[in-house]
Image (cartoon, rainbow, N blue to C red; front, side, top):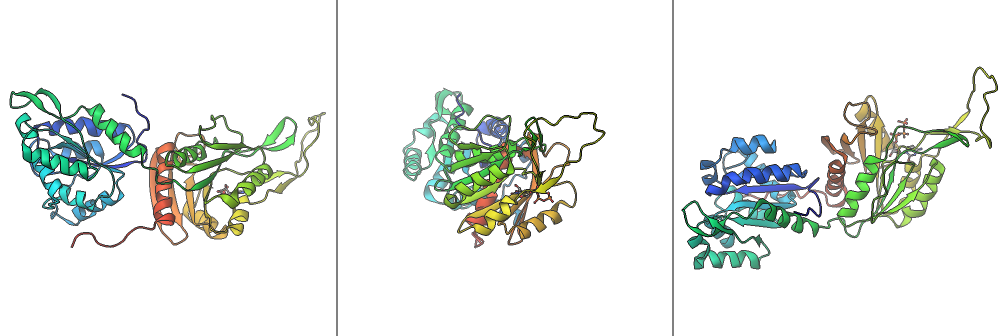
Length: 411
Ligand code: CTP
């Protein structure tokens, strides 16, 4: 099966209803999680007769909700449908599809569907005679007319012993449908995102420079994630071993001063600036025209001068742009990050403990805390940088572009 996109950063809800095929949802959950999706499982009461919630809980790493009225937490689960990128119901029984078609909301899963505005994919499993029953046919038609993707079940031996059309569609077909629904989700379309990445190199002489350990991975991941979500992306990058991402306008630079020029050029037409570059704070006051010779000198003193603070400068010049910075810290991470948020006049700052094992410079993974100018805080635990990039974009949307809806959705 071809995977046109992976599922990093995608929030999915997997609804499991009471069919003998419920055990197959366990395999589906594993595949979705392996592709990087954050999957929350909702089970109907009937589904729990076939597979225990604990199985899904262990594999998803999240509590499984089953009952609309069990506790406040279930209410919180309802919010999942507002935030989900897609809802998948697999297996879906005839009973579930009838409720969904009629808009009944007697259980958590059906209620969630009424609340959902994201793509919904339904993978039915039932007896062959049920699938062809006029009532079921009518409900499937009603759901499809509403834009729900109802997959056709497959032909084969069924639990009843019949050979008929009623088997849960193969995992690969469900996954294809998920990918297809997400690929059309270009929620950053219309944004012109300016991203900086990598280190800068400040020359001492033609062969030596001052730089830092930044690999560019975080900034490149953000550029790719924004591109995949429909944004037009300009990536201004310091020297990096990474391949320039396709379909992103990449502007390579070396020094802080070149980075400043490139960003200044593109900033006026950008809607969002994400400054992930590790800009050198100091550069040699003089760059030697020829290679410095040691000539038996016991020491060499380099005189350094401060580079311009590009982020603070652009933030001061902004018209309507959203301006986001990173804070690379090794101690007192949050308090230093807050100072930078205020000091540079940012909308958001992404605080990064670069001394933490498993994250930071050069690593494929990272963990950050996002702080907003309005005092909100979002902790994103250790995860691959590509997935983190998507989570960061989602946080930017939630905190800056479309602040969260706060009304209650269940009376
Ligand atoms: N930054 C910048 N220009 C500089 C230095 C930093 O635009 N000359 C940006 C970085 O890209 C980052 C943010 O400012 O988005 C914070 O960078 P960081 O290195 O964490 O902090 P500094 O402001 O350089 O302060 P310090 O080195 O004292 O921690």
